[in-house]
Length: 452
Image 1: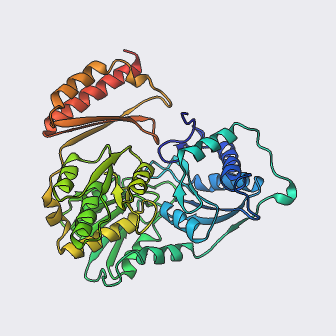
Image 2 (image 1 turned 30 degrees about the horizontal axis):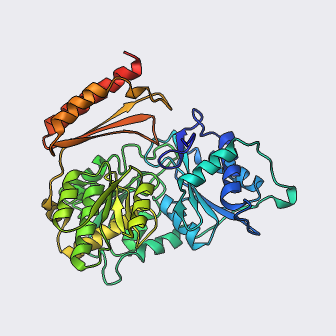
Image 3 (image 1 turned 120 degrees about the vertical axis):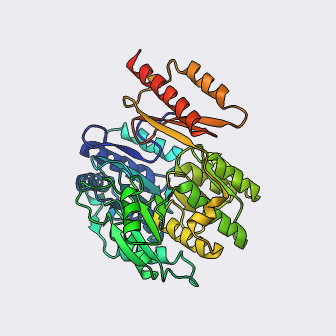
């Protein structure tokens, strides 16, 4: 079955101009309460769900709607206030709660927002649970009897608890002393967490993107906009820069020379260090977007590599299927399953920094092992829920595929599950070739949308 509301990572859209508005979110909370924590197969005396959020202004409104939905289904709610998505996953598991919810649109602009769910144990929902929630959404909302209503309360100390959790993933025989680090929290959920983690492990920390006002999340800062971080690292003569996205589950890093390292490079550093130290369990999982050069370099070192669909939950599923630990996406979602069961920007940065100490090299030295094949990525905006973009593109695709065969490159076309765009990615041995085919395909899709 096709999903009506859930995309690659929860439900997301522009607030007020999509399903992300109070009445829908209230019904969503009620439906999720019924399915996740208060149905016939999983009933408890006092089901409880945790709700966190990032720093968007719309979070207040949507949080209230979710609370109304859950409590009307007989579910208790604990609210944490601003907290990274991986912290919500951790606390859901650590506090033995029935479910966790994060109000965030991740790296999107402030006018967007979304809802992400974690089931018991802090694991993102599978397709079956998402479809079950959607089925409940189509039913009339009926509150439980008054004596069964849930209660809501805010809890304190969650940030400090999560900071300690992150610090404990870093080797006890290592420290970050003598390192100067710039952290960019994207004016998002990690603004009061990430700087403290690195400081308490010994680093001198300079913070940017740490003053959220409800409207500036991801605005020219964070993992999707690293230029400000590059400048700050150079200006402060820092050793490294660490950029997170709005909800703290993505990581991009910058070295002392201002060079940016994406998720592929950082996953490679972690895998190489673990392989050298004999602690790598199995291989590495990437996605359709993972650079082919990294795959070949891992294979040269005897490290198995597999691809899956885009989305960190697909990476997680493949890691668990293979009983492996390391994987992620070039966008900066990185999973280290021996440290956390979801992508976590802070913990991933700590794994990179500990790997550098194991390898006794810096980022620029380690990543000389391979040079990424040039990639051209173009996002073509399409009408919401439209499939017309596929009409009439067969000829240009065939031409591109013929040009790129025999190991010269590859093409990935993917309709985003979080934004109304088609992502056109062409990877080739030469940049000019990748750019040429990507622009041809993108222009053909634009014509298909216009009906030309």
